[in-house]
Image (tube, rainbow, N blue to C red; front, side):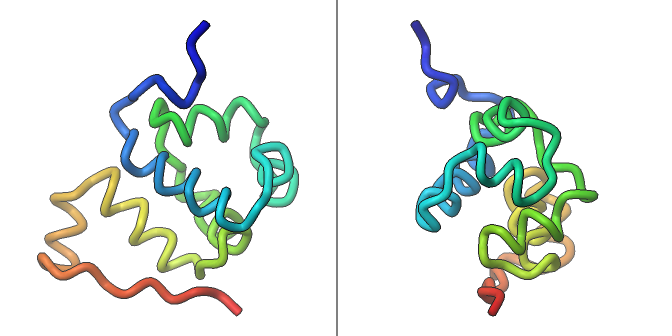
Length: 101
């Protein structure tokens, strides 16, 4: 049987970063889905496996639960989901992410 996190989708790098941030905060996928008002645990599993990107409508809620502000979480997603757009906006330098209080 294949573990969902073993499947690499087109957004895998971003999904793995989100999974690492969630795990660092010691919350489960179920807790994150509930606290951030996400569609389902399966949805966040798909995001973490890189099978789907995070829609911008969830940037604020996910950022808050993962300890980032909405704009920093949006920059993180853009960096992994659309690197060319990220570079056009921010250049080769990545902006420092600020943890939310």
